[in-house]
Length: 229
Image (cartoon, rainbow, N blue to C red):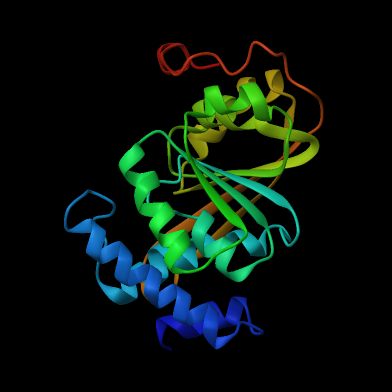
């Protein structure tokens, strides 16, 4: 199967325009990657599977259509941009590096995406105006799970979801139990997927926010990193 066919399996009603946008995204990613470090994965099929398809696997875990979603530490736009292309979610992307946000804003403009906005801001600053604002908050391999939980869960509405896209690491989940308890979240389910063409595994952790967390969280990133919950 061609790499696009695997995405078509996830979205059988996808339009040709969706794939035109995805191709344009790939072209921009490669172009910008020549002058800034966005990804070490540049071969067409690998990008489609390891970045695009991998990002879109989130939709097998939760229906995000018409939901508000925040992608924390998005980097080159994963999973936020592919999700904005293929779903009706209202996506907010945040990243701490201005150069990456400049790239993402160019992507948003070139692809004419009207359901996604990108912001140059850290999660611990963003929460000051966006606490408990999102139906779904996601992060993809940004940091260890106990660190991600403190950065992401304060942004989630009670009854909403935090989704972490990770490689296989059950030890991380054990280490995060204390943080999840303090921050008012419970594990719904762990999903495991084999990427097509033997390109690796993906584990997606789905957490539900069951109660509001203390306003003192998140702490500064320096404190979170030095002393994780």
